Length: 289
Image 1 (cartoon, rainbow, N blue to C red):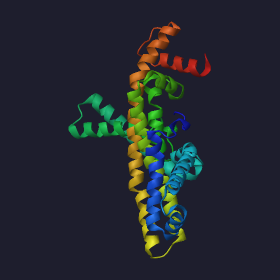
Image 2 (tube, rainbow, N blue to C red):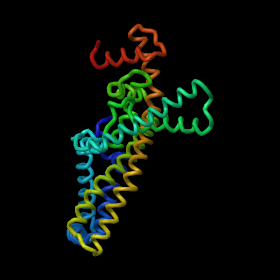
Image 3 (cartoon, rainbow, N blue to C red):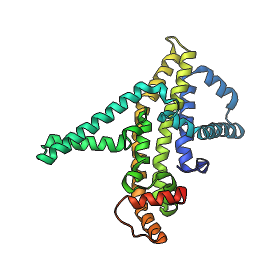
Image 4 (cartoon, rainbow, N blue to C red):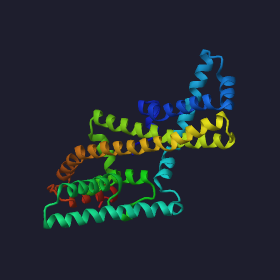
């Protein structure tokens, strides 16, 4: 949501970009003799100059990763060539339909009679999964899990307040205090760390695995690194996205009521509890209408 270049050399950049690069360089140095030979020839013996050169190399790789972060995230959200992911799309839509149907059935049953404990727990689980794992509407469902998680909290201010998230975010950043913004930034940095570790680790380990195929040390080490980056790191990435989304939604809850009140005063409109006024604010921000 905020400018990627503003992250350069801050804490979020170190956590989200430099750290995964250093971890993967260390892993490949230990696993792959070709990488070990190149690093030792380029940076050893360690002197002040060679250490500075090694740090500059790691930072340059991290800046390159930051530069391509937005299209990479969009790729792994499912925005790029979604027609190639039709089976995934069908699966996520079917899951969304199932959760919506179960939720509607339980709501209808609850209107006629009291739900028992098991039904209440099932209802809450359906509501929680729909709210955190899917956007508000079947037509908005994306073919990949990460995209649905991010789209779910991007849609939150529109669903709850009737305010579009994109024009609202710059106002939220101006209104929120530094502590709240830093909390959101730290959560985003945690997501960036796992995302970059997953993407770069899977691609690099897969490449070295193909290049060193055979039952030898490098192949086995690359296979282990590939599996670690593809499964547990991917799961941690999804959990970090959920955590990031939770803080983003909290920040919207803190700031948007204040924005609604201030905009209502400025526009000479009495703020009601309905979403209509939020929609009017969004139209004014985007179209000046």
